[in-house]
Length: 68
Image (tube, rainbow, N blue to C red; front, side):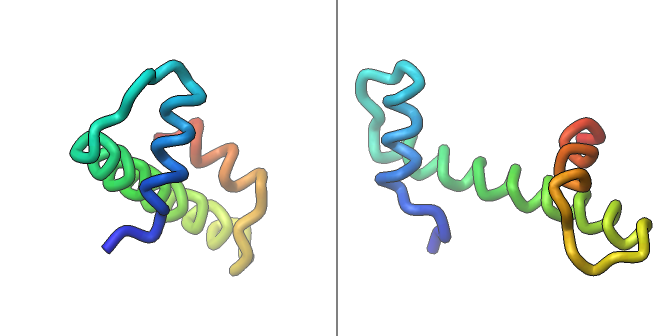
């Protein structure tokens, strides 16, 4: 089961130009978004650990975004 609500992802897609979003597309958007967030968080965690911290900061996320 997905952690992100399908309705929220559908609203984001519509707010960015999609007129309609099929249920299969919405489910895939959720799956792919969660995978992207997981990848970004893992990279940010590595950067925080490298800096000697357990807490991920915004700067870690920004640097992780550049790295992936």
